[in-house]
Image (cartoon, rainbow, N blue to C red; front, side, top):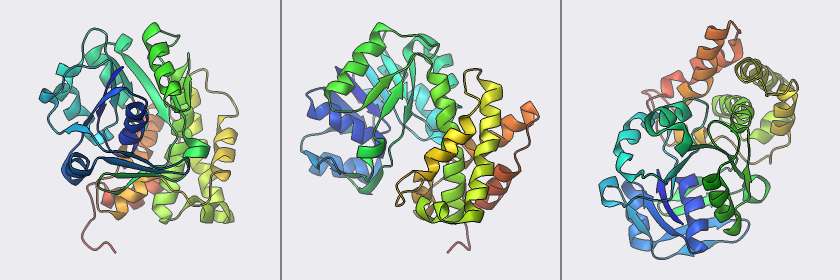
Length: 312
């Protein structure tokens, strides 16, 4: 299989490395110091399952130099989606399928509108990962949380999706092919919107929040608001979605936090508007109050464009 990792940051490089290690033809589209390090030294993955070093990497920052693929693993940040969609148009052929793993529930319809619903395989990744140093990816909880769930945009199954699923599984990546990917997207959004709002606002790993009653109460409220919106938006989201999400967050390894916190601490842009901001927007449309997410959004909004003046 020929795969293109479009937005080869922590997640994209992790999955690309697993595919390449198994013999698939992989091209990484990245930028900056991370790209330069991969071109110079290859790609390293630090994982509890064992470290990987791929010495020869096909990596570029110019999509026009890349030939079409069977799979595009589309992993850019939400704030880059609208720019990236036209830039990658030349990579999409008749048989290309796009796994899109953006946080939230906003980017998937944009890709479907541009490339056709039949080409888009929305995906859900539950994998804490970060760029430890340029060219080096760290996955501190791969064993517990390393799965990829994806499926056809409109539901059901497809031959292309089955082939891609089998390629991931054969590469050692826990992967699940679902007939109802939107349920999975909403269930992750319930967890992630609360997890990000709480760990980033508090500047803490999840363990300290799990141990603190008042913090747990706020997490519970954040989960409940998003769950109400999810159930109003997609009929198969179960009645106990809020409880399931809260229990999941309370069971996470104590030493992890949302990747958005890494972005904030490094002075980078954050995806706040596509997490708590999206909850607030949809709540207004549906008439569902979202005061806890409004609080988190207000606290974090000065950081949306990067580190503000006066930040510590």
